[in-house]
Length: 125
Image 1: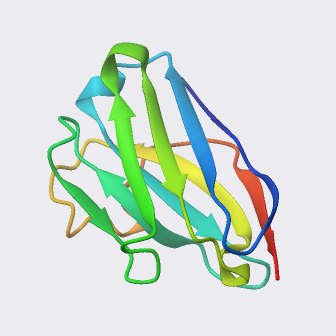
Image 2: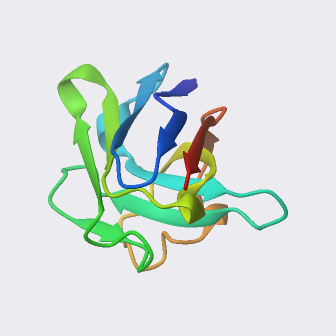
């Protein structure tokens, strides 16, 4: 089982970045996918989630309207499109998967069984 997050980098505020999460070793299309992030000195927090079919999504208030989560089950991949980035978006971003179906409960990191290694996003002001 592997989740490989990539696409992080150093960008200026107001610009965009797309993170990718590549899955292998399990039936990706059966799992809800989410992105979490962890800034220095802070807890890991939910950013966005998408159900197995892609029909339902959920976003943290802090990124609603700026970030878009999507998935490509044919290629075992999930994306996080991040627009209008702010310095407070600076964090390590992790992708994770869960067999849960209710996005309302899936904001908890403890619902996720597999995690990627994280990719660092730094937004300069």
